Length: 75
Image 1 (cartoon, rainbow, N blue to C red):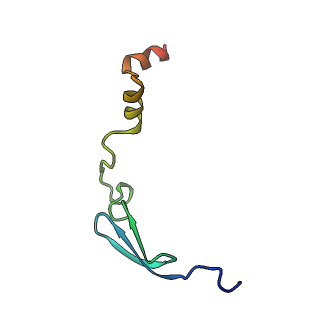
Image 2: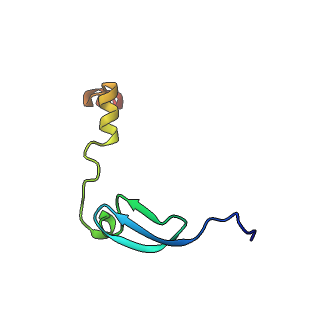
């Protein structure tokens, strides 16, 4: 490897919103995440609402598409 072109590989703390801290190594000293393996629904088995207003609902609200319009298109 060439010297001087690669970033330093240092100890890193990964901090989740839930408070979980994971120690590993990376090129940055600290990484903040919103969801980790301790609080992710796939790993915990608990359903947790991450986003209350979904993207589809926001799209429909933005463009004025109603449920009736959708059912007419299906016919």
